Image (cartoon, rainbow, N blue to C red; front, side):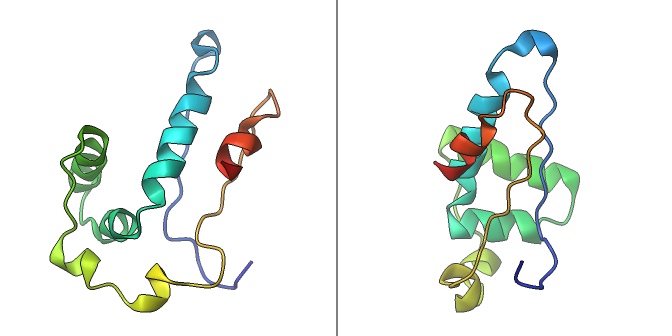
Length: 101
């Protein structure tokens, strides 16, 4: 909507038998991405393994912002435009509630 390319895009795949597990994952992911240092560290990750290690560290409370992420330009941390774009194909129609929260 702001004319800029997306920098992060996540897909959540869960089996039909997982009930509402995808909603819990979506809620946790949205909360984690609200941390601007964490978001920038994900964007700066140079490999899949580095990306996954950042997520693991955030989940277990050991994430610390790398120097490059904490030195990100102010417009990424204090932007006055949309920073998170959520796309859903949730068959239950309630995933948007968790994204908004």
